[in-house]
Image (cartoon, rainbow, N blue to C red; front, side, top):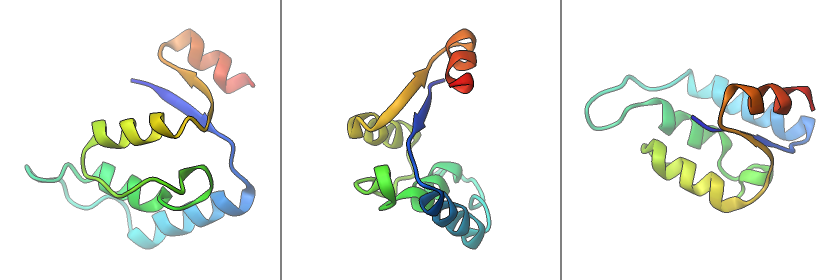
Length: 88
């Protein structure tokens, strides 16, 4: 698992929260669409550092899009690096 931190404004964060609320959570998972990734990508696409993200149902595709943005300000791949990231 990888955790990335992105610099966002309070207004961008509010728009993401609003979209997530309006979406009503992740759609029901099924064998075609795992659900969660679709909701996350829909909630963040086009906002701030996520302006070039497109909706996808594939976790690896969303990860690839986010990594390709090169807009994250921190990244953690293990517990110790996550602790450091969260204390910044």
